[in-house]
Amino acid sequence: GDSERQEKLFLRGFFDHLLLAASGRPAAYHAAYLVYANGLCREITFLPIEPADARDYLGRLAADLLTGPHTYLLPCEAVFLARESPEQRIEDVVEHVLRRPSCSSRYGPILRLEGFRAPCEEDARTMIQRRFGPFFARVLPDMQLP
Image (cartoon, rainbow, N blue to C red; front, side, top):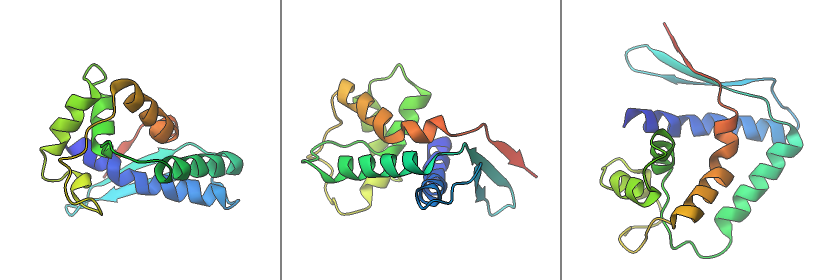
């Protein structure tokens, strides 16, 4: 739905926050904004992160994404939806997300998603915590701006 798309868009702001902190220019707080065509604006504020923690997380994320074969499928939209519905199995959430024409996994270097499956439940939950935990831990409640 709409909330997963918005959260996906806020990942870019979170990476800006991480990169600024990793470069040695951490912000006390970092705000990211979505501005809609109708003039409405949505803000998310991220809690501070220490430079060493930002570098460590970015390094672990890069290693996680660049090592070993990845024969599984775990789109970020499924991660956000699973967070909203923790009682659902990750495999079911991934299948639901893949039926949407807007799934981000439909764009990129992998042309055919049919050969890929969601990771097993335990692995998926571990990956979600490892890859998205810092994002979720640093999001402050958002607010609608006029």
